[in-house]
Image (cartoon, rainbow, N blue to C red; front, side, top):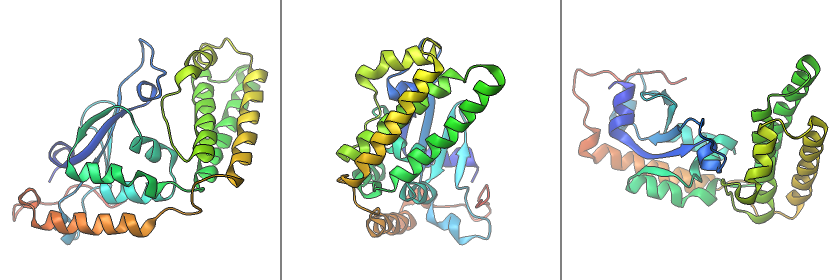
Length: 243
């Protein structure tokens, strides 16, 4: 089965991400689409496994196989967790609804490490830009502020909200280069400190509910075995690698 067929015929959830999901879109913004597909269980019985992810087939489209998606979400991968909370859902079946019902099972205090860790790495790159070119990549600076703010709010409230709401204009001002870099850097430092402070009082659990997610995955794989959609022609080969 070709990778594009897995996305076309077996997607359980797809959404719009990027600036449009964050409430930061402008007239020049692309439409980034992300999705989750469920590879038919019989494809895993072969030596060559179905792909863990598929880039495309449309432009700005990327999808993960369900198991890989769950693994990354359990590790508190920021992009994956945000994908689960997009306000712009385009495709959703019953399995996708069950996946979304598990959103809280993936959330834990581990987000402090992954969100702020990613942000600090990006800040180092922005500071290198300033040293070399006199200014950072302003779009990246804007999204870094957004991510840190999202992390602080998630730790404080236990809820992950993507749309920046009333922060839209201040963030877009950063993107346009209208805010001096020292002020942007000071904002980053304040948000990081607030996230650190929120961690100790966070309503989030110490670890995600791995058992609950695994139960969902096992039941879904078993159901796929019995589903007519899981039929694989005898001469077909599973496309992709298990990288």
